[in-house]
Image 1 (cartoon, helix red, strand yellow):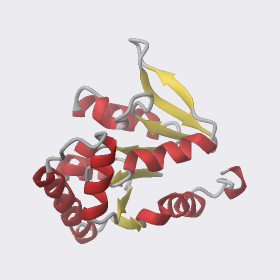
Image 2: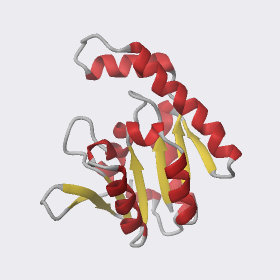
Image 3: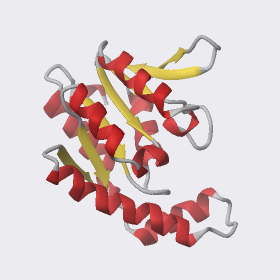
Image 4: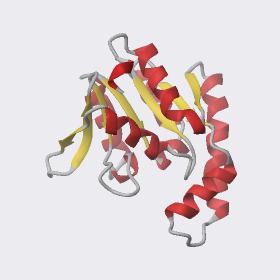
Amino acid sequence: MIVNIRGGSGSGKTFLVRQLMAVQNAQPILDDDGKIEAYHLDGNIYVIGRYNVMSGGCDRIPTQDKLYDCVRKYAAMGHVIFEGLFVSTGWKRYHELSQELGGAVWAFLDTSLEQCLANVFKRNGGKPVNEKSVQGYWEQGQKWYGVAKAAGERAVCLRYDHGFEDLVALLHEEIPFYEEASV
């Protein structure tokens, strides 16, 4: 199973993955340069990207090709979860990757624009927020949900206020040996 968590800036993608990692015994996996490339979680789940920095996820991976290679690599070994703001803004190549790997679950956070703005403001320590940029990313996220559905992909909604529970339920549904008690 591959889960592509999507949402605009401040939607809670990174927060959600960090919650899962905190209860699933996340062990870092280093690349050839000694930097974190991914994490191995209980249940043979791999989370792609770095989460030892403030703005984590796949946005720290230097190129899209490297990200796709990581998804392919870890999908061959188990289940994959990945997210990032730039992951959320594209469609075509991620759809092609999904098709290549037998399909993905496109998990969209339903965070309101107002909440995204508040979260980015808080994350920035109260500094001004580029509201047009946040709104643009939010609008793209709204659009991609419909695009994924229309393409026949499995698109699900993760509720902002219950995203962790929704993600755990999704994992429990998709991974037969995934134990709810482990979270």
